[in-house]
Structure formats: C-alpha cells, structure tokens
Amino acid sequence: MEEFEVSEASKKTKTIYISTIFSIALVLLMLGMLGLILVHAKNLSNYVKENIVLNIIVDEGAKETDILAFKKDLESNVA
Image (cartoon, rainbow, N blue to C red):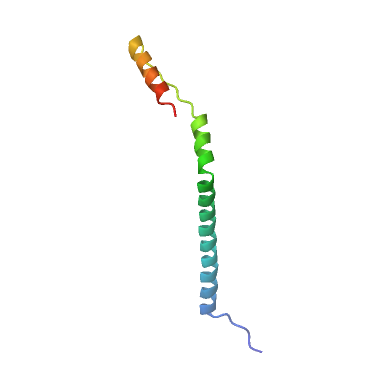
C-alpha cells in the first residue's frame, strides 16, 4: 500500500485560503463597526456635547470687567 502524501502545493493553498478568509473577515468587521459609528454619529455627538465639563481658571490679577466680558462672550456662543 502506498501512503497518501500531501503535496507542498496543497499545503500552500490551504494556508493562503485560511489567511484570505481571515483577512476578509477582519475587513468586514471593521466596515461594520465603521457603519455603526456613522449611523450613531448624531447621538454620539450630542452625548459628547452634553457631557463635557470645562473648567476655566482666571488669573487673580484679571480685571472684573475683563472677566464679565469673557463670561458674556462664552454665554453668547452657546450652541
């Protein structure tokens, strides 16, 4: 009886096949994640806008008029 031998070409073909399937799966996964981000971009944008906290530290030597003008400018630019 002769033993069944797997040729080198067959091994290479299997390796290429597996790596191709793995690569395509990763690309499809990344495209799906990108699609989800794009679909939920508006909700994500609103969430980030509403939950960002900004602390402003004013120099002790700043004039009261400058501080009030800065505060007025910030309040007028609220979107």
